[in-house]
Length: 209
Image 1 (spheres, rainbow, N blue to C red):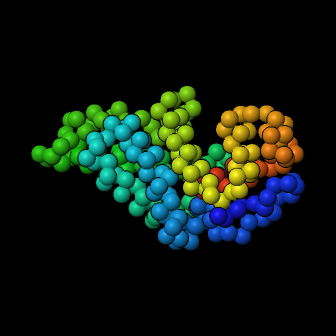
Image 2: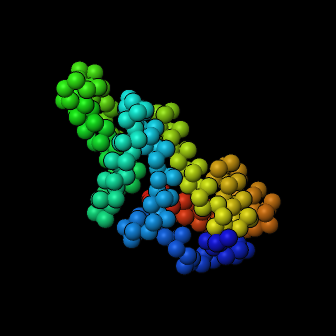
Image 3: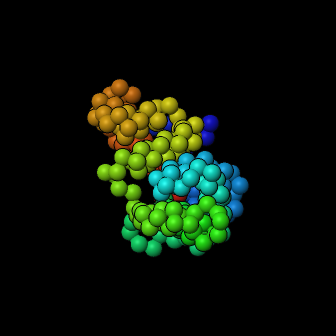
């Protein structure tokens, strides 16, 4: 097990030198094959849900997924967070939206093929690619599932007490002092544990600064 931090008894936060703690974006840009595998594990289900929400037929989604991740591979080196609020998920959603639009335009132009007027109607009604709205139950569910997949991937990098401190406060919403007392830690150490895991999760999702 790779511990992304030393055992939490103090509030000092040592630096990790493990490759797994690097940002997913850094690893993708470096051409790390494992990073590409993790990207697909994390984000393919999310892209699939977007495609379903945009009324794409099941038989077409596999091709769109391939197009989306091929576009990511082609353009990842140029991706930058230039403004506050820029996120990898937002960028990925824009790519997926564009590929779905291309699909509806293409099928609408193909004589005798599936599409025609139906494809044009679908294209006209396609929702705009936008930031995730927490009030939308579809997007909120997709986001929770993405976070769950990310947490599953990084779980083994942390000792049990570090993870319990994070889970109890960040996920279960318990009081920091109560968790500290239960785990034999200081409240400050519990906050550090929570911060470390959240920082690692953001890095795994490609969302660290």
